[in-house]
Image (tube, rainbow, N blue to C red; front, side):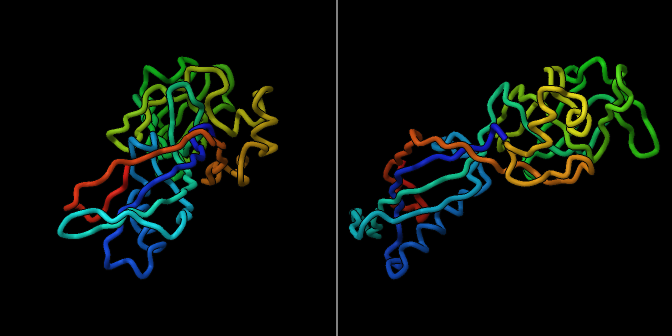
Length: 234
């Protein structure tokens, strides 16, 4: 999935003296506090981290509570969707005016009626309704369907909530695309760009966890306020 990427960060994590006996655990705990929340310094949502403490030297800050800064090398897995990226999600709710999906089982996406291709017609049924393509009745989007859509906008203040679109080519139901889309069917079926089998024929709720290398993404922090116990140098 395009929105997943790896980044390398050189950080300074400020640790309370009471945690001096187990610095690595204290560092991991502070970084874990940032999981699944958007961070400007990382330009994305932190999903996972692997840290290595650099050396055995630390800089002690002046103040009533002398925090010490620990240099850390961190490998980060980030969720960082951008406009025009293609993402995949599971439909959780749909109606005539919108489709709401979940990406990676966590992040929300909404596709409004203006961004649903005119070839799709909404039909309300007892199961809550579904979108059916006018050109191929086998192309159906209903609750539980895995869909492929384009990113239109990203709201970082809402933890990367996505406004998506089903108008660009190669978007729609992944079940249908896996059979009828000549360009993307081999990619979807072979799983070359996926870390696990998403069970497309059964539309199982398994998400893509492929990552991209981004060796040039080096992040530095600033000294924190001395009164804050949980700080990262930016």
